[in-house]
Each structure stands twice: as C-alpha cells, then as structure tokens.
Length: 475
Ligand SMILES: [Zn+2]
Image (cartoon, rainbow, N blue to C red; front, side):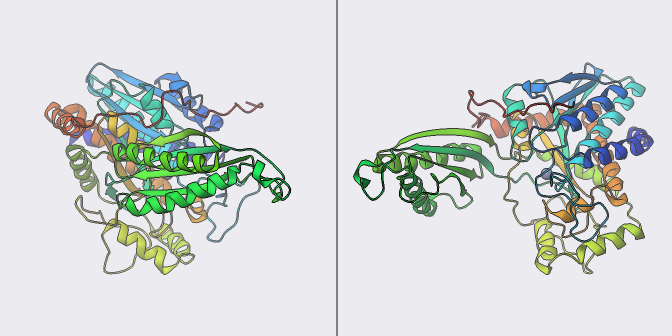
C-alpha cells in the first residue's frame, strides 16, 4: 500500500498543472489528424516532466510518445486529444450555447482523457525513480480516435512492440472497469464508374453508376437478414452522380461501415458486402473500385488486468464531488430526456434506489449491463498487448456521448476531480503490474490464450496510409 500512497501523492502534486493542460486542449478543439496544437501541448508537457520524447509516431505528425525509466517491464498509458465537429459549446452553461468559431468541440472529453493519462505516466515516472526500480513507463499521445483509427495504424507500424501492458480510460458517468465489448469496424468506399448519356434521347447508351449504388444498397438490405445478429452495416452517400436527372450518372460512390463482434468475422462480412457490390457492377455494366479508409478491431479483455484495476478502484473509492458539482450536474440533467437518464443505468447494469446527478457508487466487475455497440481503436491495441480501460465519472449521469452537454462539463471542477482520480486508478494498476511478476505472467498468459487460435491481423490493408492532414500555416 506504501507504493500506492506514494504514487497517489505524486498525482496530487501535479494535479493542477494537468487540469490546466486539459483546459487548454478543451479550448483548441481539433478533429481527426489536425491535432497539431494539442499534440504540441502534450509534447511540451512530456519534455517539461523529463520524458524522452519521440514525435511523428508511425509517421503520424499528431502522434507522440514519451518514455521514462530503465529496463524492466514497459507500461503504456494511452491518451487522446481529438475533438468532434458540431459540438462547440460554452463551458459551465446548461443550455445549448455554441462558441463562435468552426463549431468543433470536445464532445467526447478527450481533453481529459489525454491529460489524465499523461498525469498517470508522470506520477509513475517519479515513483519508479524514487523507488529505484527497473521498469519503464510510456505515454502514447494518440490522435484521431474519432473516425481516424490512429491506434490501428500505430499498432500496424509496431509502435506498441515490446510493451507489456497498456492502460487507458474514458471519461464517463460511471465508476467501472470498462467491459471489453466493442465492435470491429471497417469503413469501406465503393466507387462505381459508368457512361453518361442523354437520359431521354439515348438512354440505351448510358451505363448508370447511380443504378449500381442503388442496386448495391438493395442487395445489402437482403444480406442483412443473413448475417450474425451482432453485425451492423450502415452507409452514407458520397456521390449520387450529380443533380441532372436527364444525364445518366457516370460516377457514383457510397461509403459503408461494416461492423462485427469479432475482427475475423468482420473480414468474412467485408467479403460478402464486396460480392454484392461486384454483382451490382455486373448488372449495370459499370466499373467498381473499392478502398478501405480505416478499420478497427474489437476489444479483447484481460481478466487478471481487469481484476487488478477493479481492486484499485475499490481501494481508492469514488470521486469526491462536492455540492457545487452536484448542483451543476442536476442542471445538466434537466436538459436530458427520461430515456437518456434510464439508458445510462441500463448500460452499467446498476440502478441506485434514489436517482442521482453524479455517480457515488462503483459498478461491480461482473455487472451485466447493456452491451456497448460502438467501436474504438483501443481494440487494436488490445490485440497486440494486454489492455485495460477504466471509466471514471467526469459528468452528470445520463450525459450522452458526443453531445453539447458533454462539452459543457469538460473543464468544470467535477471533470478535474475525475481526471485526478482516474490518474490514481491507472497509476496504481501499473504499480501492481511493475511490482508483481507473478501477476504480469498471469496477464500475459490470459492474453496468449485469447490470440492463440486467431492471431492479430490489422484490419487496415498494408497499402492504406493514415490520412494525415497538413500542418496549419501559422504553426
Ligand atoms: Zn471518446
């Protein structure tokens, strides 16, 4: 317990400067591979804290890695700092009030995610040095979690090679060890090329790419009846071929998201969707080009790691929210629907007798909540190294993900308390791994058993590069 007390003390000492880092990142919301200012903040902080810094990780200019310590096992703490479009919102205001600017906002709380991870890594670095123990801690600043699959590209490039355990978290409404439930996801684009012609005077000379897209969509509707029930297939039109009905559309394109419970099942489903597209091309005598823009694997769990994190969460207790935190959370809840509040409890599987504005309870490890059906690029990390994720409350119960309400709470005192709290949970979990070789062996055994039959295969093809964005001219 002495080690935990020491590392928690280090977290408390650094808490203020990392809350300030989180607030700065909140104030410069950058989306999908444009996080140049945010990564500069994180790189500067890594240098200030004395980490050995590697920039441009996996050829991604908005990814960074900092390492400290010597020898021993390597613990990775994963952080993020990307924002979302359309979720700009004033801080501390419980009604919709976007800020002037480009409309981007931290509607998923990744400003907190990155800062707390870097705080945990800093506390661990100091603890390792004080104790004189062999062991290394790495902070990975990972961009583009929202729609950019940066961690999948980083995993493919070997950025996590040699790491023993990865620890991360996500801002939440609950205290819990995250359940390893997410869907593998491929974003695949289908470009059809036909031949234009006058749709009235010479329709027989035209070959419609728009027809091909429509036939593909109909084919996939029928396919949906015959896929595993936890699969999800959805689409968006990229190009419907123009606005002139009297011109046979020579070009049309559609983007699909194809999701499965398991990455290997997704590979099979991808091939079936491709066949439907090929059938549509054949029927319409059009040419088809297919490209994958990004993909992520499902999450793999690791029971010994999850149990370790749960023990540390229970030892630490819940976030010490005060009356002002509860009051603002109640104001936020007043903007939510009954369904939003209810689904929050259904998700965790725990419903307290009295409704609450903020969580003051810990979800048991084996609670059976509603299955999460989104996707995350943490999935790919979990396939290459044992990985565990905490959820710690930084916002009112019921706050939907990707909402203005979430942005509004991202730099409030409650969020800062959650930030420091989860840094303690992550650091304590790392301390256990670094000081207990038997535990590390168990963790590795559990991981090896999971991937023995179906080893990791990155769902992004080798020739697809991360869609990095240019550095802003004024940086
Ligand atoms: Zn997120």
